[in-house]
Length: 404
Image (cartoon, rainbow, N blue to C red):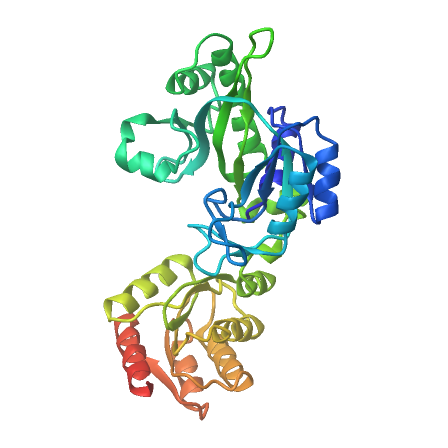
């Protein structure tokens, strides 16, 4: 689950991480009120959408020369003007695709005098089973470009969760960012706070870009501040964090994916034309691969899980068919805990309920497979049965081509 920047900063502030003062706003009036709560005279107005590249993005409804989704405002009136332009309009960035995302909320923050920008992120390194802390002096830039063009400027420090964060990890992060003196000490403390927050909140990703060093104040003191952050969480652990689960903004998610989550289905929309319904994430990935191997493209990833019921199967069919690009459906079920005859009953019931009008190929294997195939054969529906995964992929591709 992803959350907005302002929500992530609220969570980090609770863990003692320094962030600029700011307030969320759902209307122009709230944006103006938020600015008046801040000292000024410089404000930053940020569009809140679940996508990166907001500053370089463009609004569909505005002139091509209009500013993007992150704007500096030197007065409350400028904040009001920015809010009027941004709220309700569609922001297109490199991560939203051409359709963009509608801006429904803003984040008005205090301006910061920046001396230097850094990059710092915490991720789950699945290869090692550890937490990876990724640090770079090239903050504020597209980290993908930095990794491609100057990979030597990125340092990865791994932390074994069994051991936990140790002082040497903090020193390594500060060294990677080339910080010295008091800023070095601040960085070590910050790294520890971020790691603790990452673990305690069951994060999948915590990215700070940029982490900024402020210009020295009158006493010559500088500070490290989290200027922008993204945070995502392990959906399987949200039951432990009801306060975080309440932060979910379903308007930022694909409606089909939201509906799928209500039935405990793992669904992700893709750009192909072959709908997939599979039990098990690994089998689903293999199914998508073999569809591509046979010259077509999957329209979705959909894992119905190990204990699918008729209701879940019917819901899965409805969700798949809401995608107008779907020209055929491949069902690939291995009945281990799940019995093939129960799945077959669900498939037949679902096909009748949704008045299926596209080709359907079903491959069943496992417990009660013969009973399952018999149910499909006697259903009176044009369901094509397949013997194995390779056969299923060839048949669905052929059926779609024939129906075209």
